[in-house]
Image (tube, rainbow, N blue to C red; front, side, top):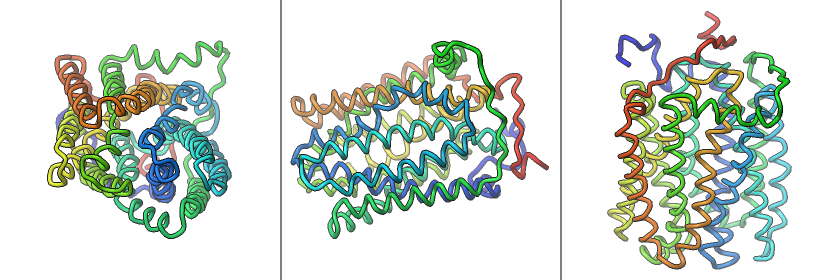
Length: 424
């Protein structure tokens, strides 16, 4: 896509934030992401402090990722109800569920941490499916990439702030204070969603069999040239990236000889990379096309993991920056391409299928990595990850289908919206 082909008005974050509903939505999301990241980043440290086990801490991400197995079900739910109302309900339910962490005191209570992390993963899948449809109703198409970038940038940038706040609260008051903070942010996020004025298309009832409905999203991805290889390629990358969840604890402990809390600093540095990368992502994606943009993100991630093989801060910290830039770019590109090539009435199921394809392999690889880490060590896991991601990059670059993957509007799709830019 050339500059002359792109719609006027800009496709960056500044243009996105000129829209009132976008400001309210991302303001609420920022609060929620802050609370979530404070707790999620501390959950592994909390479990490590209670059990003394790297594997028990590293497996946290399995419980967060496992609900992606039901992505098709949650995607169908998102297509059958109003997205905003669904997201408000999820935030209120999560505020109640998170209160259970106030009872965690000993290693025997770790199962409660795992249970709440599973609920977090479920909420992420539901809101992710609903969010894609809400964006398509709320925003002009040229800003979908900026919206996806903002989501990822907020998630990652909170890792710059959240570790310091989380570490201070955890040291002073323990995990209970972090849980209380997250409850408050869930409630504030629900309030921000309630202030949106977007009018969503009425959900369309269907007489198709449930099995056929659940497979619609996967079929949509599989039959769309370019999109299928990009999404399945991201799934393959996540299938080895999960190894690094356990490997990072080993790097901190055995490689850098630091306490488990030092992982918070590493994640903070990774968050800085995501913030910097997010500043350039929308325009770079528009210039390269979604296909090349995804491959570039994967390549940077492979390079970042390779640098973690050298156990010194001078090399590890740049490696974390590259990880922070690379993997979010790959996911942003895949979601943006899906949103542009999918009819709005299928958006929830398509988004749910993207979650299924990308994040279920991550859940499996977290479990496998927890076992392999005990046998092979953290350096072997980083090496396997780097080689695996590089191989996926090479395969995608060899495909003309991926090289031509530039988001185009889905055929026969008309979207009504009350966003300022669409109503003018």
